Length: 457
Ligand SMILES: Nc1ncnc2c1ncn2[C@@H]1O[C@H](COP(=O)(O)OP(=O)(O)O)[C@@H](O)[C@H]1O
Ligand SMILES: [Mg+2]
Image (cartoon, rainbow, N blue to C red; front, side, top):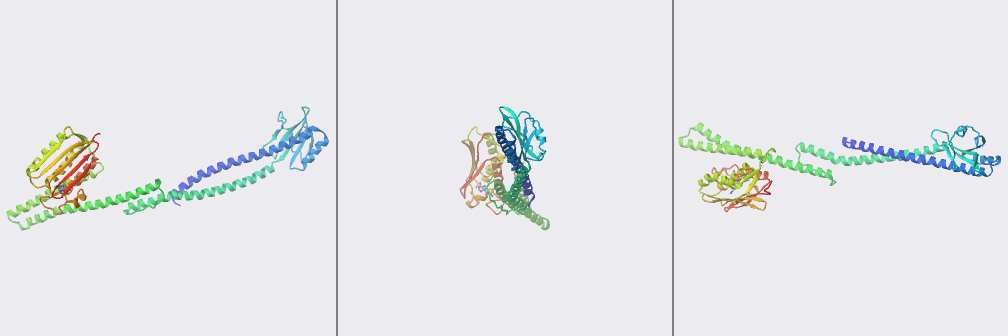
């Protein structure tokens, strides 16, 4: 038996044992009292019937007759005159005297109990007055040995003891099964969690019930699956990071080595140095993005929402992007309704839009169009970032928000992104409680839509 079920078992047992004992004790008392009362009543009515006979003829003959009758039974009778002088007795013993001497005040005609303390006294006793013409002429004392009551109680005790033992035995059996039933799943779950602790995430817990324990088991299984997923994702992420960091470093080291060892002519030197600088820039960008992601991943990441006047905000975005747009000879159309406000973190919102617009510019041909539309629909604010650039192939769309995912796997210098931009965007959008969707067709262009729901706080 394990510790928990032992504890539960002992607790249950103590409670039930206490209850059974109390119940049996009360029942026992009631039965005994009842029984003694019955005996006393019987004794009293016997005395009363002797008294009725004696009232007819209160003389020696009748007294002897009554005594003769009582000497045959297990009760005794003592008949006295009104001064309590003994006229006759069915018992030779004079041990009854002390009861006869006992002053019990006025005695009703129906009689009175003289002694009922069956526990301490050897007899119980009743008294019936003999009244002739309203005058008390004598008394009929009835006695019964308490031995019979004691015998009765003894056999009663035996029965009670037996019942007590049986109920406690049954209780123990029930408690054992019950506490096992409760603790078994708990122990199973404890085992499962220590398995998870050791890194074994493939835990299954057999569930029989749909109650809280069943739900707990389900939660533990879900937790294990989630942990497993997180662990795998982390490993993949770390692998990608080291790969992404290694590639530029390999370039840098390779060209630096060439520069050092071969001392190439000026023209070649410049070419190699340019590559080295580009790669260093890439590394810089990568580290910046990784740092950004790490910040979002931390639980302490907070979104500082404030009321943003979108017309001012969007004009600023437009201003910031103008050089890049002009450089590629593109058109940038910004459309928004007047007097739009949004509750969001302005720094994060800018990061989201710049990332998406940067992609739109980067992955579009020179001279094409990039558009940003912002409007309100019911209570939500919609942002649509649209380009007619190269688009994203259908097979890549499901993975496009994954970390390090790029359509162009080869690292062309001109399109040397980190593949982290969209995953940062998605995390930031979700941190705002907003949604981002993508619509794209290869060679036609892409549309990213962000919906901020319930724009009031
Ligand atoms: N507007 C777009 N048009 C076409 N392809 C895009 C667009 N935006 C993103 N992509 C594709 O999604 C990939 C991931 O984007 P992102 O996470 O921003 O990484 P990065 O821009 O650093 O490559 C890009 O490499 C590109 O292939
Ligand atoms: Mg990008």
